[in-house]
Amino acid sequence: MSPRSDELLASAHERLASARDQLAAGHNETAASTAYYAGLYAARAALSELDLNARSHRGLWHLLREHVVAAGRIDPALVEPLQEAQALREAVDYDALRIDEAQARELLADAERLVAAVEEEFG
Image 1 (cartoon, rainbow, N blue to C red):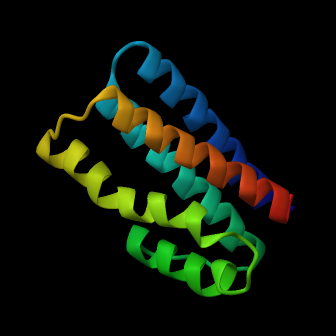
Image 2: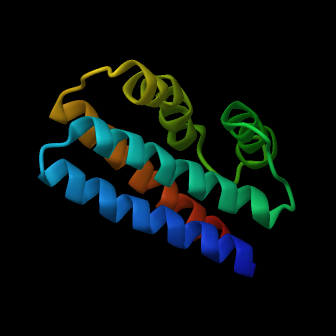
């Protein structure tokens, strides 16, 4: 894996750890947002390995599906929950949406699975 991809995956792992801590402290919204970013950094690491970069979150998920998922390198079931979580993360961050612990845990688990898949495929 390239040094840049390694940095991005390290950031993903830091965010996973932070999301776990936030969840344990009862900060569901912050945990969910942080977990989303862990998945985003993992996706960026995968694209980095293909010398691709996106200018937006939406563009990143599109490129990941087009170049990684379509190539059969990562299961779409691992990408879809994080891509769909973009709207949730925006509502949490910008509209003060409240979510329950189960939703935050689910997003964290989704992010953990995507990070692991990127490491397995590109690591």
